[in-house]
Length: 339
Image (cartoon, rainbow, N blue to C red; front, top):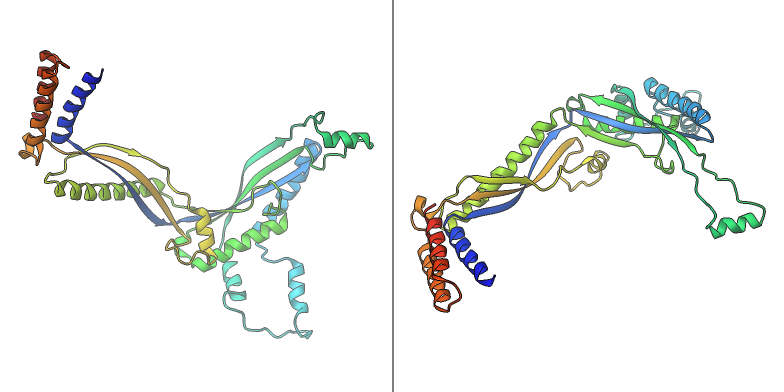
């Protein structure tokens, strides 16, 4: 077993020396400005039975969609509070709007968006067995367990507000419009970050041709791989051959959370714009390095072959391999150099 492994190692060493391979792992990326921004909002309603939950859900959904289509940007209570803060005149004086305040709100409210619904789901909460729960056993001893405060039936769907053509719009105004949409929907009954287990509002940035963006990231990774591999083999006195294999190691990175923070002024040090969609890929690339027959004798190839042959002769002299095994090993080395 040991002798066989030694012979295999000697043969493979000669092959690697003459017709080697360069393996690299590289990352590539590509960016594009989003064509569309989607604001995803969830609407959830719960009740003790399916009929009541469905009716409650439909009522809440109707209010959210109506509010979004009407484009209301403020609650009436907020308007009255603003008026109460003035001097009390019948025609209160208008203070100059702060930077990015009322003027931006008015301009942002003119940006149109489409409203759609998708992903309706009905959830039924499973009943739990309380026989082994010591706390509920104590509750029974004191008059019975408390009623479960969570209704067992739940209806939920997603309302999508879509802003198209954002490439041609002012980014600050689009960001303000996104904020307005979220406020309108939550004020009308959509789920917020404080809605328990319901998903909070989410913002998605969409590029029409994502496949082309992926291809650009692959091209970037392959260009980097070829450049690095060329430098490596040139330093060793060889020239680079063709690609023998390529495999992807990861999936594109989702940048939505970072983009939302950037839209509202966060992560200023990050060069990624709030409306840029970035795709990152990681590729493992193998390049062939042609053998000495095609490029002349590679540095060290002859010396390595001589060492391998000498090692085979020593194994034969020690009686660890037969003459037939020694001849076969030498033929493998020679055959490798002839490829």
